[in-house]
Length: 136
Image (cartoon, rainbow, N blue to C red; front, side, top):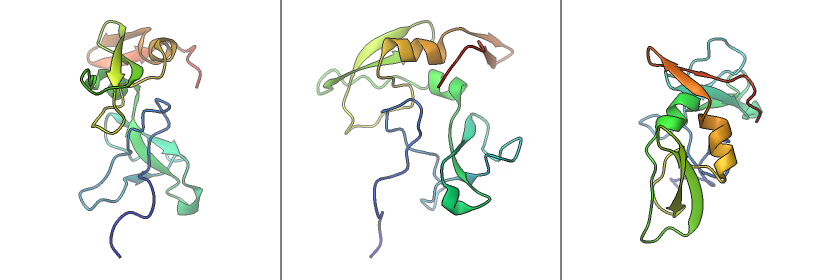
């Protein structure tokens, strides 16, 4: 029988957003090695370890901080029922989210998490530099 055998893989950050890992055109997740530097993910993505059963390819590609914080905010004012926070380029704003509808990685459970993850950065020539006091 064709189809998925379980829920799709999701990225761990932001927690609870359910943002799916990067997939290839054939529907397979983009696998990577967290031990190889630089990792093999495309620009804007980073290798998140977690699939130890894959051997050398022990992770999947998820949006990095810069990509996460510049994703659009998917506000669902008509049918959103969960309060979430997203970074609008200047500050973290609250919005209503429906987890059954399309979303982006710019989706945080709390204002504090959004600010810890996205604020405190400066952009220089398109490269975002973050404070070093960030903790997962």
